[in-house]
Image 1 (tube, helix red, strand yellow):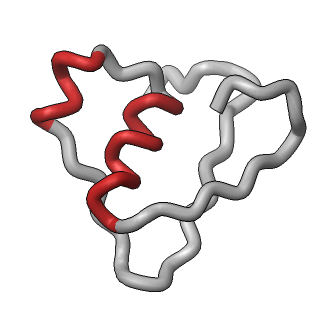
Image 2 (cartoon, rainbow, N blue to C red; image 1 turned 120 degrees about the vertical axis):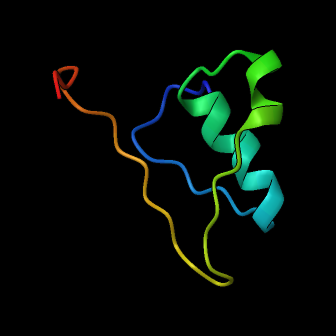
Amino acid sequence: MQRPCEHQVIVTHGGSLTFVVASWIKMPIKAVGHAYFRVPSGSITTLREADEPSLA
């Protein structure tokens, strides 16, 4: 996930998406066991990085 390119397409199964998102948000590996990012089967998930951190 740390490749110098503008866009990446990653194909996963439901449970492994949690590890992809956790890596993308730089979640500590010890915390991943407490997270689950659920998506419907056959869905497309788009991750975008904001230009500036949100204060909300």
